[in-house]
Length: 256
Image: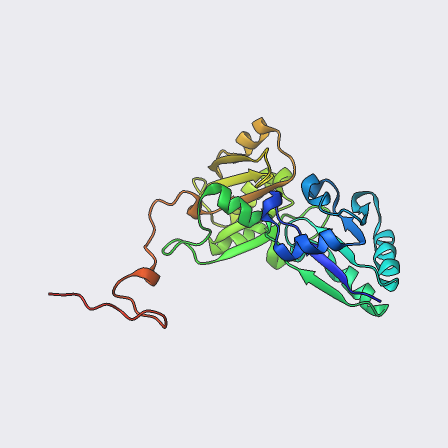
């Protein structure tokens, strides 16, 4: 029996795939991939393997393909967009394989919210603004614990990042404001981050819903609510301050 590899292939740009992930796909005998979320150039890396589109499969069918081929000692890759550990449903797959005596290995990938930050040309934490990032999703058919309601998370005034939630933007706005964000708080929506058809919509909690409606975007987008998007002010990092010493650099003495 062979291991099953749960591989993240990055957010969309085929060049944002890790070397390890690329090698595994190229050598794979079987690749089960996440539908249209995986770019065609990445699928073409699989020269000899058999491809299975998970978009048209149910949980049991996916597990069957992974298990039977691993049992035959084939190189099996379960290919996820972004990073497998973020909304990737890998836990249930790994646990079921473990019960059958199959070991799993997770290969991380660049996730969409990092590609979104790159597209915005910003950093998600800024001294004097926030040092915290909260990654979540809005409640819809998938429930969230009461303590993780948007209005509760918004109380932290941190950088708030949403997956799988752009179609619920009106509710996001309502709950964020109820939790304490001001209507003027900057919001950025990045559609298909790093893909060729990437699109960025920027606004505030007061107008982002209207702007998004005009763009007719209802899926495959990251929503970021934070003052870091367009800060009124922020502090310089102490890391490179000449008067700040740390383990790798001693503070320089200034001449009188």
